[in-house]
Length: 161
Image 1 (cartoon, rainbow, N blue to C red):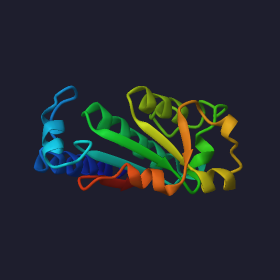
Image 2 (image 1 turned 90 degrees about the horizontal axis):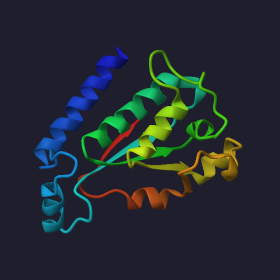
Image 3 (image 1 turned 30 degrees about the vertical axis):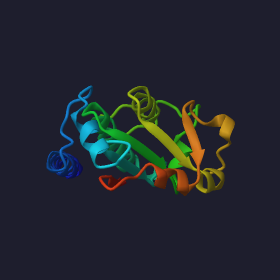
């Protein structure tokens, strides 16, 4: 059932991108030219809002998989970890923290960042989860909601897991 949900989400995402003229492959600048003509700084934005933690690794893995696929299709992609999700953004998260046949969560977070994705952790939620800045995976920024909102533009799609 969750696989079907991911496929539907990917289909909707791809269809939306085609309709907005953002189906260009990575490295192509036609989307950027369209955005510049429209007065936007980026051609497209995808935000994955992840609220679950160790209590629902299926949802976390689905969200991260979609974020990675979005990057692979050349779209500016941001992941926002909030509510319970900051507990997963730590350096010492074990490789046993994974769901089914997905890679470990820590590996998925690193892959996302290596592919150029931005990863933010909610300042308030990070504190509530007891996560210290020095314990975060390298590359994850603690931020307030305003920074996340600054990543959005008129063409942004937001998915929540």
